[in-house]
Length: 192
Image (cartoon, rainbow, N blue to C red):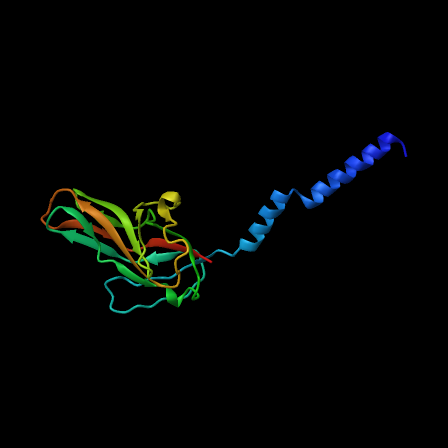
């Protein structure tokens, strides 16, 4: 074999080895991705109105849950919190599942009323592990990262959650000011 043919064969063999085996860093990265790859799931839990005495949670493995009507009123000024709602995800998420992220937002078609000098600021979420996070209250049909939190990442997903809406009464207008969100907020829990 001539020298040029040997060089050509060697170059082709080297390229084939690199393409088929990859660099050590690439192989380690691919192996780590494969080993840590777990399926991320979402859950939908229709929630009852917070004013009802009973709780019914239907299991429906989908993408969202509907947060029912919630409200807050005050005779003074300052921060206010709604009465809130308990969400028992132990009925719909398998034990041992871990949270990836939580998204919560208010769709644009949901009726919301608020007093003239009252703002609606945040959703306040607390899980069964005691972790608390706030997510900006936002009316939208296309939630972005503003509506999402990873503060619960790694926490137990199949626990009891408590969701409230926070606001601020800047000045009294009627003598009993506040807000009402008439149901329909969406909460998406991603878990694995």
